[in-house]
Image (cartoon, rainbow, N blue to C red; front, side):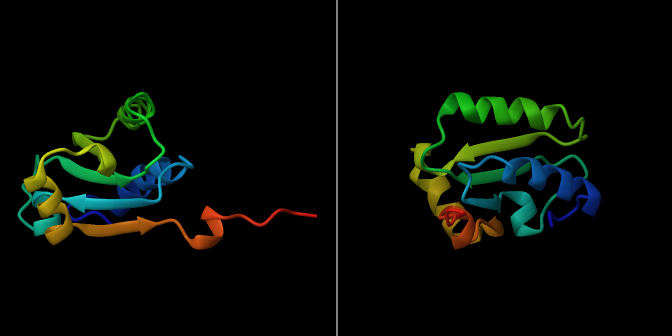
Length: 111
């Protein structure tokens, strides 16, 4: 779950993101990943979703806002991050919160 966030709120947030078929991984980074969060710290999430476009990310952000959680949620698409320092931080300190299983990536056709 997400450090400093009640389990029920973490689950609601992660379930909404997981419901997007493009998302393959959810990685927490920033102060919460480092254990340095404060009461008002935002939730920094990097999504591994190579086929997701910016418009879809904005729609996801709006859906997350509709959850009315008291924390700001900062979403990044890994394939669109140009800042090398941020990429290095995510790779070094990021915490994997969820990863789509290989069965979910390549569903078998039902006969």
